[in-house]
Image (tube, rainbow, N blue to C red):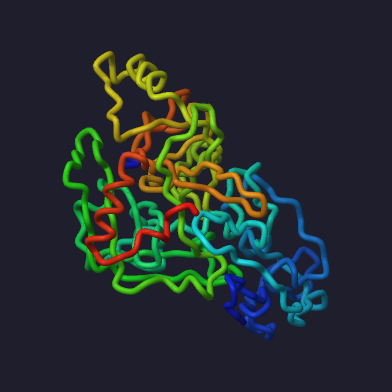
Length: 375
C-alpha cells in the first residue's frame, strides 16, 4: 500500500518575508556562475539578475551552480541583501485556507505538478525518529493532515506498527533538500496513536488513525502552517480535487528512476463514482470479486497523474466556495492503487465515513472539535 515579525489581532497575521533571511553575504553558500565571477546561492528576490526558466528535466535536483530550486546562483556584485519592506499578509481565521497567494516562488505552479510554497499548510510528514534526520526519505513514513494544533489525521496502515516514541511529525515542510524556505518547518514528538477499532489492514477497511502530539504546533506565528477542514459529505463525481505528498515523482519514474520527490507534489484528480471505480478494478488483475468498501472512495484515473508509493496518508482535498480566499476540505486520504499513473483511479480512505469517529475521539481526548469544522 502507498499503504519574523508578527502581530495577532482579529485574525490578522502581519509577516515580513525578509525577517527569515540573514543579511550577511557569508551566510550564503558559494556557487559556480557561468561568468566566472564569485557568486552565492541566494533567494531569487535578492539577485538583480533575472532567474533562468525552470528546467523540468532537472527540477528536483540542484539546478544552477549547485543551488536549490528556490535559489539563483548570483554574482556577488549583483546581490542585494537590503531587507525587503515589511509585507502585511492576512491569515484567515478558520480551517482549510490555502496560503499559496502569499508564497514564493510561484513558478512551481500546478502546471509542473508541484505545490506552491504554503499552498497546503495542513500537510505534514510522518517521520521515523530512529532514522537519520539528514536523509528525509529514509525517515519519511508517509503523509498526514493537521486537524488541530495538537492532532494529526492519517491512515492507520502507516502507523499501526510503530510506537509513538519512535514517531515525530513535521509541519511547514516544502523542499526537503533545503532549510532556506521563507519560514522554517516545525517538528513535534508524538504522545499517542489512536487506531480505528475496526481497522483491517489486509483490505484497508476503516483505515483511519489519529496522532496526538506532545505539544501543539505554533500556528499563530506561522503563515505556512494551518489546520484542514474535514468534509461531511462527498462532492459529486467529476469534481476536480487535489492530493499531494513527497512520494515517488512521476517525471522521474517515467524515466525509470523511481525517485521520491524532494518538493511537495500537487496532483489534480477528479473524483470517481464508486461503482465505476469498482468495475474498473474488477476488470484489472484484481478480478471480478473486487469490492470497494464503504470507507473507501476513488479519484484520478488520468494517465501519468497519480499519487504513488510514499504518498500514503496524504490528504485528498476539494475546493470550498469562498469569496475571498482559496479554501479546501479534506474528503479522503491516500490508501492504495495498482501501480502509479495507470488508467485506474487511486483508492482513498473516505473522510465522511470517519467524521463522527474523529469527533468522538477528539472529545474523549479533551480537544474541541471546532478546529476542523467549516463555519
